Image 1 (spheres, helix red, strand yellow):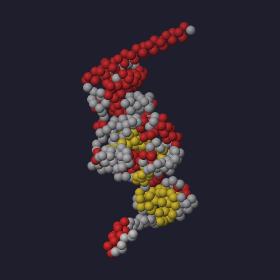
Image 2: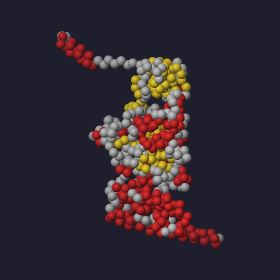
Image 3: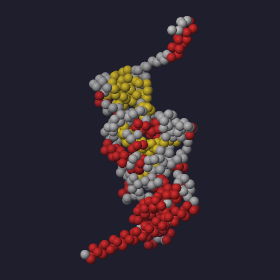
Image 4: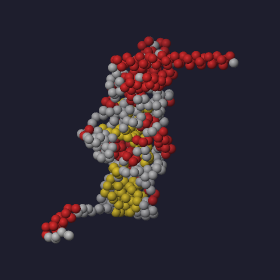
Length: 539
């Protein structure tokens, strides 16, 4: 039986209907493309367009939608950069405002995938599952929302973790000439995050497609692809795509930092994730931005770069931070890569990025060609905040390493006068040469932090000084295997604490035991080799 109709329930129904009423007006301004070329469209008549707004172009040829990003807001026209099928947009095609900034899909479904800067998969594995969206440009957290860097990001590389440590939330620049191992350090750092609860984002800007494919295969071979997203804007892609690639990578990383594992916003009770983002490299992004700006007829500045190139990199890198516990305690660590020309770190882009970052790992061509891998120049490399994230035992053992190596390099020029040097200088040279050799490390052979501390202890205590240079690396690798097998419990003693005198004594005993075994095996090998040489001579 229906309700009796009276004035009271009519009033109640009307009130309810009015309350539920959601009257919205969607306004879009529509105009036409006046000029298009080189991926740049000039549109007349868009009076309400905002800087950085997403514009929607409709191709009269294909009927498809192509998106663009409003860049120049002149009095009579809007200059926009196009993404996607840019050749399909012609003069006279319709263009309309969207009222929103450019955003891309983000989410856990991207892990293990290769995507373009628009968030679209390009690895041939089908569509990406459930995602949400984030703007590519996002305001960096303020001072109150951050907390100082206090947790380490272990790269597994002895030269880096001991002298140029990286902390969660840090921006550490990797800089050097081409073919000096910059990408190798970044990839090794990604591989070493396996099992450490870190999400990694590798952004390839202006790289060859074959190079990106090789990096993907390398990560897959080392079981690192499961927690990695690769954002690729290859050399074949347009300048606008290369320009937004690092920002797209930052947006993907921010999703994990600002949200918990359940996908809900991070808070004190729902911790945010930890992310490592590699920008490889920002030199090519700067070149793409220069090309884009010149095509947009913006006035050129130093080295023809636009005047806001510094602001471009600063607002990108400031997004890397360590959030406070109230905001979930997540972090985004940035490893930007910059390529120099003939070691010139005083060029425009390198000096800009050096001033924004929290230190730099400088790779020197000369050291690389001498066989020092990684080719880290200790003199110019520095980490401004990473030391706060080092373990106590590492600080204890690595404290004098930088000074020892600097002194060694100063004295290395006198090595040819070995007979004329006093005993103290000769001892310093011998020790420095062994410590330099100790830092050599092949790719994909990461050392755990306690293993690094143990080998540094062996070097600092002089256990290597009477050994041949050629034996240092085999001895170090053998010592690590020996300690992992027979003294695993001893290594765990100084994982989080300082190395006590008792532990140092036990470790010294273990090193001496292995050293005697190692030297004995070397003598056996040498005697075997000499015996075979004698037999060959007799025959």
